[in-house]
Amino acid sequence: MDLETIRAVIQSYGLAVLFPIAILEGPIVTVIAAWFARQGLMSILGVYIVCVVADVVGDAGFYWLGRHGLSPRWQRRLGLTPDRRRVLKRVFRDHGARALVIGKLTHSAGAAVLLAAGASRMGFGRFVWWNTVATIPKTLLFTVIGWSFGWAAEQVNGWIAAVSLAMLVVMLLAGGWWLGRRYGTDSGVA
Image (cartoon, rainbow, N blue to C red):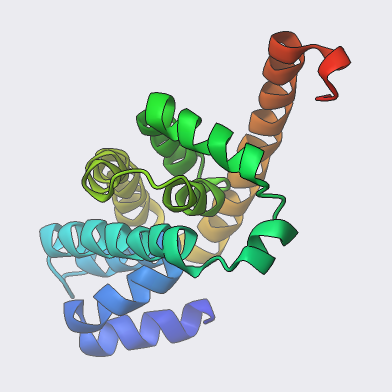
């Protein structure tokens, strides 16, 4: 969906249509909706609440897909061997909250972390709690950006993409460094 279409639909239907669009498009919809709220077309509190709930609902969909939607064939394609699933379960048992929060706040790793939380069988209540804890400040940030810079939604969308990519690169480098230090190069993990 392009930005002009999102603007037209939100402007025409307000909060009623914001929810399903925010599930699909996320941050940029929050930015645009906050800008419309600044112009008096919607309530800023309504925008914030709807966007938080939509984000959590959308993330629950990724969790469900990771938990129930990955056939054994897709698990093999993604490299989820039985040994890796055991490691994934242990990671989310011991560090699931941290993984969710980091995944949500980096934005670029979010979908993979949400799928992994489901695949690891992380408890749904715990998943929703920590996901919501991370969603609240993230959505607040995009709401403030929209309120302040919504007129530049296309540029903001580019900024979001650039920052997300940079954060993904940093995460991959840090993860590789950490794995190298933890397991060394003799274990086959490089």
